[in-house]
Amino acid sequence: MNGAESLVKTLLASGVDTVFANPGTSEMHFVAALDTHPEMNCVLCLFEGGVTGAADVYFRMKRDVSATLLHLGPGFANGFANLHNARKAGSGVVNVVGEHATHHLAYESPLKGNLDGVAGAVSHWVRRSPDAETVATDGAAAIRAARSLNGQIATLVLPADTAWNPATGPVTATASGALYRPADDRIEAAATRLCQPGAVLMVGGAALIGEAFQTAARIAAATGARLIVDTLIPRRSHGAGSPAAVQLPYAVAPKIETLKEATSITLLGSNRPVTFFAYPGKPSLPEPAGCEIAELASPEMDTLWTLDALANATGARSARAAVNQTDLPDLPTGRPTSDKLGQALSALLPEGAIFLNEAVSNGRNFPEMLSRARPIDLVGGTGGSIGWSLPGAVGAATACPDRKVVVVTGDGSAMYTGQSLWTMARQGLDVTVIVLANRGYQILRDELKNVGVDTYGANAQAMFDVDTPRLDWVAMAKGHGLPGTRAEDMETLVKALRDGIEGDGPSLIELALD
Image (cartoon, rainbow, N blue to C red; front, side, top):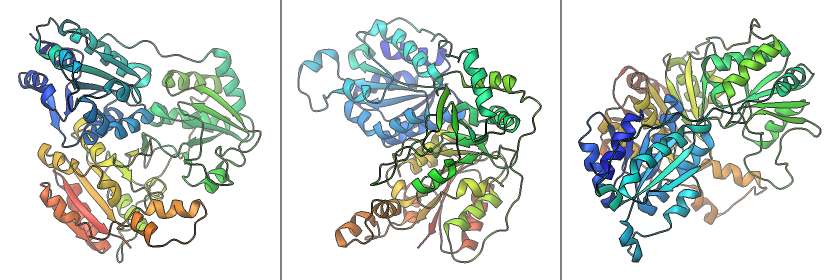
């Protein structure tokens, strides 16, 4: 057994059975070890941002870690943006990063770089295996770290000689440590605070999923507090039967308006609300002056235990929470608009669907519109780095192969990680992709207005448009192995979306928007 084989066996022994990979020369012994273990699900992505984006959403849906395989410092750097999103989502990821053999690092080879520095900038845990005998132990430690504190980024640097030299193993990762819990007096104080006028309960993480979300809604009902979720959320139960929680808007003015009557905000599994950017003359914090910000449980703490304790303290077990009701709209017709797309999604998404929303400019109304749809999971952006949704759909479909995955993305965002279409086709993933072709970075046009610039000329226009030459998403879908449809009216969109939902494999729809 060599070091690479001991690591693959350690992953499998520890319950990690999926690797999203973009390997290079220094990882060939690891690839060879994967080849001898057909029980490991190996998913090839053609860009490292696809690797890390898939691993992020895989964790969000499965609530357990996968591994990535990346190639030296440049490969890790290519995956950095979606690791940033994963960190903001609280996702657990085990990165295995190949490195030059230890003796080769004495020389200034082309791919030599500050891998530890790059990895340390986004990882919670980084370790470089010094020799083959430690690889299995280090791998088990990486898995434990990735599962700790509700999910962390763990990066194991694997020099080539530690992969090819003889080793012993495997090692099974030990369970992550117990999560911190708030003291009883903090639970009691929160229970009292939530009963006061203007109280807000803001929940995140595991508190947005399934029965935990219902518990949060019952606490709000029992106390009279408003239940609010943040603008950017990793995942939430949504649609009919889910709690009727308020989601903070993106724009500063409506975010301030939403919180204007808040006297206290109790944070449970959520960070303090903040505006996305700073703007001239606008505040960074949206709550009113004098509003108490009380952190009951940070995202790294035991959210589920805290919810149960708070439910007991507030007498919320028998409370009746307000939930969304099914109210499927009519299917839209005529000229395409983003709201008509939301209407079509609300009418057609099947129960149990996973919906990923990266329509940065055009999809802000989707959460409200989909609140009346059949029960679904809503997956959103978390770190503000675009290009997460296509690889995220790969991760979601890999984690939940029995569920329909639908993703909506802007054309600008989709260009970041369009290689993920190929992975969807190769793996036969059940994903329907809708690309909103508004021919530009609409979000940037909006942001220019937000900073006070009302008019702009040719140079600024050139930075926002992706219309010359015009992107052809149907041709790109075909080139990546997917069937594609261009919809210039809602009738065509509805038919293509229905076909995608009723089919078994991947498909793409390009929806032309003005």
